[in-house]
Image (cartoon, rainbow, N blue to C red; front, side, top):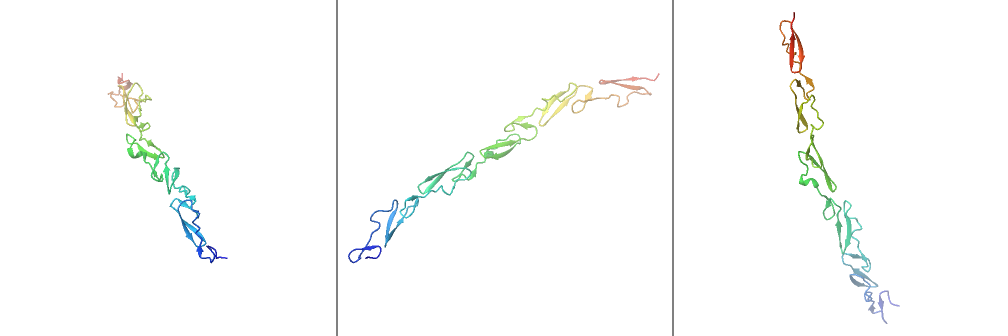
Length: 193
């Protein structure tokens, strides 16, 4: 009997294990009493029969979907991400969408604006009308401003919202012991008899 891997009357012939073309992909390498395979990059196994799944290591980041290829893979990124591995969060604030001093806060596939006082809206585009609540009293006229308002009071009234009737007697206008009687935008003196 011949040693393993040899045949013939005098065991002079090495058995070519590659003669049956056992390698599914790649090149068969004949060895004494066996064979090996030189596999292309995308295959593995004794007969190069196993396609290597490059997605098995889950290379795509941030919820990206991996598609296996021949010795390669590709990632399909979720909205808001980019890059070969979906590793880059797209900065939606890069275009500076917020107006009137608003601060942009980046989010996955979106952004929000934090508006400064006095402004509202998705991009802080709306000047809040502080006069809408009719803050001026006693018939005062309201003028809206950024994050505030100014009241123009009718004659005889004062205060930030025209809430105070002006006391015309405060300056003690009556002389010789007369008593001041306050009126609206006026006064009268009651003289001593």
